[in-house]
Length: 178
Image 1 (cartoon, rainbow, N blue to C red):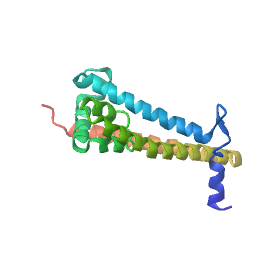
Image 2 (tube, rainbow, N blue to C red):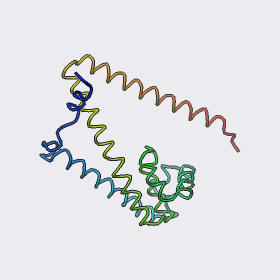
Image 3 (tube, rainbow, N blue to C red):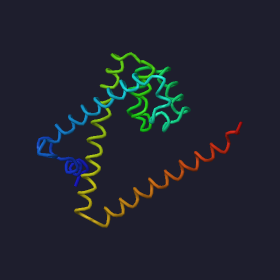
Image 4 (cartoon, helix red, strand yellow):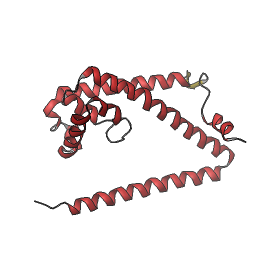
């Protein structure tokens, strides 16, 4: 069986009922709009908070240093940073708050966040759906292979997590305490 033929089984048909009886494409479109709406809320909450962002629950949780780093990115790149934040997991839901607090031009923010939603969300939606459906297809054909893939994924995630923690600790130990 060719790889193209296998790929067709990994994603549901676009017009077939997928979730709550809605077609696959419509669920994806709704998710894109919901993400766009969330980004607008983030911006306006950040704009409303302004300097109080540091003392807010979100600001305290993020930490002043991390917010300062995000501010530097926004000040350097402006609305382009908003588009770029879609592709960086930790920035995706923190940079819009800072963009609002720094009063990035809202029309440019809307354009950047719309482009981000229209490019990042479909890739995630189709990609993750293909991964899940592909794994389910594998599980139907070979439960043992599907279990091995799941164990391998968990092992890689655990290894990356431990590696990240060790690097962070090593970096903290190198910083002189004043």
